[in-house]
Structures are given as C-alpha cells and as structure tokens.
Length: 214
Image (cartoon, rainbow, N blue to C red):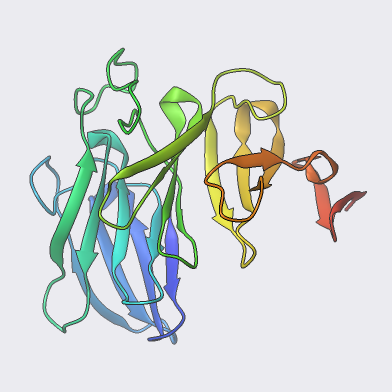
C-alpha cells in the first residue's frame, strides 16, 4: 500500500492498495468494509495508484491514478461500490513516466500526492513536471507553481503534500531532501508564496514557524 486518507466526519479510512490496483475502505477499528478498482485505464480502474484524499464536506474520495497520469473522484455516500464522479488528467501515455507530453497547465505527468483544503479545492503534486497544481472540486484548473530546481519554490520530484487550516501548503520536495511551506500571498489571492522561515530539511522538525533540529 502507498496512500491513506481519513474521513474524520464519517469515520472511515481509505487505503491505496497500489500493487493490487484498488482502494480499500475500513472503519476506524480496522474492520474491512469494501474495495474497488482493478488494473486498467478505464473508469474506476487504476495503474499503480498512489495518493488519496477525502473532501470532509461530502465524503467524496480523490485517488491519484499515477500510472494513468490522472485523478479520479468517487462518490462514497452509499454502501454500494463508489461511483465515479469526475476525472481529469490522463494526457500522457499510460504507464510511461518519462513521456514528454502532459506539460501544459492542468495536465499531469506521474502525479503522486493529493490534498483538499477547507474550501474544497484540490492540490496535486505533479511529480513528473516538478510542480504543484491546484484544481477546484470538479477538476477545473486554477493555478500552478514550481519547476525543476533547488531554489526557493522549485522542486525535484515532489511527492507528499498537505494543507493546514490556514491554507498553508506543505510539500515534500524529495529530490532536494526538504519540506517547503507555502502560504497565501494575501487574503483572497490564488497565489501562494514561500515562507522562508519555515523551509526545512527533511531531517528537521517544524516548530511554530521556525526550524529546529528534531
């Protein structure tokens, strides 16, 4: 397994069972409820899925279908198998991480991590393009930032991503062995700026906006 996401409101845990090309759903005690998915590139199928995230407002589940270079969103509101609500990406050739395609805004190339903020917007680590992309809950592109490098705001194969209650975005910049934090540039702005005081190496811990050795 690779990714995990928790529905805190409804009390469910979703595990991305990557090698079995499926997602499994459990209750908070670890009791199995259901699974869905299989190998392929059709609707509801996966090719080495990686990350997952839950929209706490309605319980819908986003799955990063890495090998198919896309995001799939599922309705989990019933006790039957989740239904596909929408999908986006998929512009690169399935299974080819080195594809030169899918570099335009809103496209994806070997995406990995995903998170949902309090407004329902979705952030994806577009790993193969060394950038972060932001979408609304329907998959419409909003903005992007990053690019290959080791400078501030650049990435070298970003993987994990998370957002806090204030809208700050934390990115695991794997190839540069660090975590980068980005915060809204100003109230109401879609842009994010890097908070230089809260950029840390992976082996360091973040403590109230400063860096401190763990």
